[in-house]
Image (cartoon, rainbow, N blue to C red; front, top):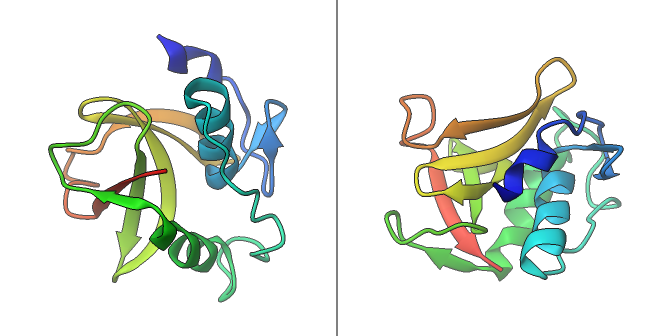
Length: 129
């Protein structure tokens, strides 16, 4: 599957390439390499995780420029937006219906998980570049 090669990429805060990615960096890399879509880097748009001007704000501010997709109409390559209290705090990419790939943390790295799981099912939205 196209996503297999991304599972070994380590989590690197502000990472934008195969040597390491944060969640936006991984989504950006996959969109470029697999779907021929160029997402902006936004490397200057946030100042680290967990800060008030961190990646959650950068994601929320910038994904509003993309096309929203209704649940059930998502497809491989669509962005998976994960929210907490209405603010998008994390991003991944649909691999196949029901699953997504995302860069989680230094301890965990890149995972493929079900966005239909209890952990995510009421917190996801989708969009297309």
